[in-house]
Length: 235
Ligand SMILES: Cc1cc2nc3c(=O)[nH]c(=O)nc-3n(C[C@H](O)[C@H](O)[C@H](O)COP(=O)(O)O)c2cc1C
Image (cartoon, rainbow, N blue to C red; front, side, top):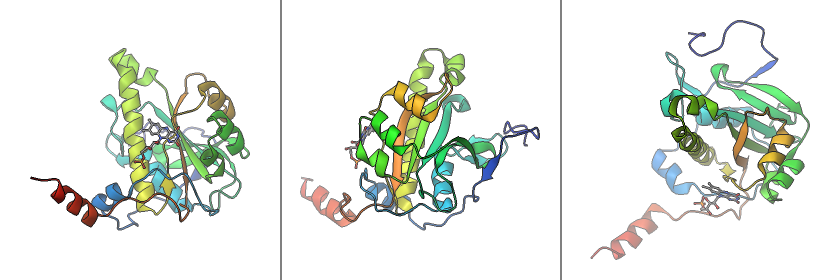
């Protein structure tokens, strides 16, 4: 099974195991879909390791052991996404600042680059303040060749669909955990690549700052309000 998941028993860099995913929120899917908003203001509170674990698992974690299938669908199960986590100073309880790479195969993190890079990352993201202020930012990178080797040019669009699926899982998981996030597509590719110290084949596609929402974060309407609204618009 380890081999199927692409993870042998050979030498591996130092890994930080994440707590195993467990159902904890009790939030149903209807409520999570309703409540999801893009949240750009956070209070000064760290995430817990359990929260980080569930966010990463929802994005790219293993959900089926036989073939190593993951939480988000992927064209031909080619899995082009490499997921990085930018952790600020005190951003996650029990985890030092730095850039980490998520390893889906054993649900762990590997320290990729030490230090708090949030300010530089925000600069690279056209100075969007929420990138600097969030305790944590997930960075979805893509290795296009994993998908285009099978699907040719069409593979490019599939990769972005993969990223969208994974990011939506993070939006919903963050909502269910009482956290807030926003998908950030506006950034300078070369600058983000340099800030994260990415290898040439890894292309940053989407950033998701995550934090505990501030009290003036935008709120969705209620189901009751929607029902009244829709009824009023039926003939
Ligand atoms: C592909 C994409 C790129 C986005 N890029 C940014 C961005 O760079 N900065 C930002 O603040 N919000 C960004 N957003 C969030 C949208 O502004 C947000 O989804 C929209 O205003 C609707 O609000 P809602 O997400 O609360 O429904 C992006 C959303 C998507 C789907």
